[in-house]
Length: 317
Image (tube, rainbow, N blue to C red; front, side, top):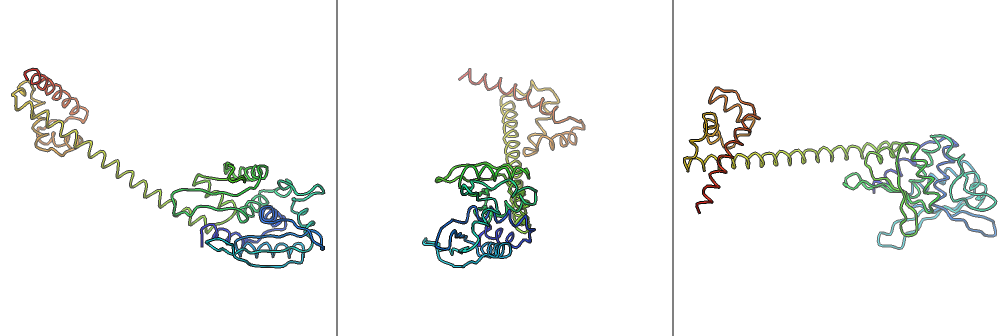
């Protein structure tokens, strides 16, 4: 079972007030139902891919409207062969659509009326229904954070974005294969969305995986920094020793004063020491306290002398 299915199963078990269940049902019917007409008048065909969501819709319609309904299950004609759970609402379809703010005398609305999401609790319920109807989120094990809800049309997509904004969840919209899709990319905001729709178990799993991944990534990053620093230290030490050796070979080290010669001795004795370690070792060997900055300036002077010797050799060649 996918992470998205787990979320839908969890939020389908929520107990809602009458106004919240109406908001939730409004979102569910908006993206999961189609109208048809028969000798019995207007009917609704509702189809979803999650059994728990289908049971929720059936219970809501039965408890709130007492409609006559038929249930059916069929397999999708694709490689995965997922099941489709269907509900035919045979009576009261027009009254249901009017009650959930999706129908007027002029026909179906592009988005629900504002009274459906009058309170924050209504908006939470509406977003719960929208996710159950047409939402998905990448599993927390994957590094690519992505939550989306298919909106169908641009007006409804904008309505979804407005409801998310009430909970400080910034969402964006793109058009994909003729449909508008509302999506959230930031991991923290996906967590906020799961918190908003009260998918607490899914939120805990998502946050645990995210924290563990971030912790691991930070360890790798710090380790890479340590390795880079070690390599940088080693390279600097090798260059310093190379400067010292060329001065010694040429006898040019006679131009080094006492402190430079002492530093040259300590560096060659401890070739792998960092500058910080070398500062302490220098004090142990000579009794003189010198800061890292002081050692750095002395190495610069040694390097300048070594460069002069290299230039002299080059001119003689």
